[in-house]
Length: 478
Image (cartoon, rainbow, N blue to C red; front, side, top):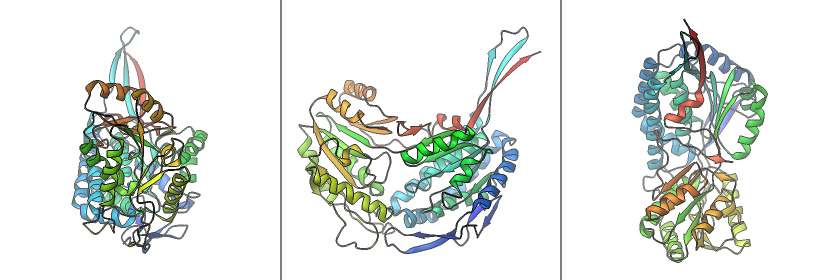
């Protein structure tokens, strides 16, 4: 599966790395689908050196030319959609329909930032000096190290690489070792589209050789991460030594509030497929559902009925609606969340275990739990799996207090038909993104990111390129 790829350094694929090989497994079957080379310290240092050379070329390339190259990247990616979707499904386990959608969203990132490359505007400020003017300019920050998680192996890379290249930066990509092939296809599209050698590099390997070397290097001027809050905290500490710029999208524990006037059927029809997409392994997916007491029982029954109807299976089967969890560690973590819920007096309405007819791979049933206290793990922490914890509320002030009491602030959702309640909820909820009667938050043209322990900076939209640019002031007197 990976025979044409490997590490990508200075414009060439390298079939060997200093740390041997890494086996990649299909989470739906447990079978090994291939091996990729694992980078050693020398490989990572070579990638940084190549990125330094590539930076000199790319930052001096005209913005309109950079834009043309990024459009060509999008064209190459669009042409390889089926190959990429199959790779995403084999590595991450998600159904093909979801993999295709993720790849399409990734193509959008390159299209959007191709145009943003043409819109890096400076400004002129009137100077106090006689005959002078102040010029405010934007320049690429330098070499970017991009670290990505396994749950969205394509779009997480696209959100980082596309704005970095639009800004004129060079990049070293370090994807999760569980999903390296998807990253390799993107990088190969960059190669095919004519991105100069050294501008994009890819290394896969253990933390000790890849992460440690990239974060310690003074040549790397920005780190961008999608990962857990614990990793983010450590990265901030590690980056402080060389005062790197840091941008990160971290954990989430999204609430969904359904007020008494909401369209119950519409809320259920949208919430269930959203919750169980990618087996719940989505940072912005709703984990905790706060339902007005007048709708609570009907919502629980409707949610459980729809959850039981979902078809589980291998993602390559077009009829599959939910695939497996990524690995055994995640499977055991979800089992622990359910055990905690039972111990706290919760009622497992449906699901709660491994499906009897899928004894291979890392499958877990779509699970609905009711009757939990707010400090139960299924409500208080990000479960990152197919668990929906449903709890009632009676007053708006009460529910805002409950949804805001945790450490996360990535996304939140509100369902109501009252315009005044919409404005109130958007203002009251502490989150970087709020969906109202909708879960559609991720788009190339919109800024994606959170507050509190959910991260810093934004990916997407006009805001997404800002973290890849330095601001320079020139006081010009003639």
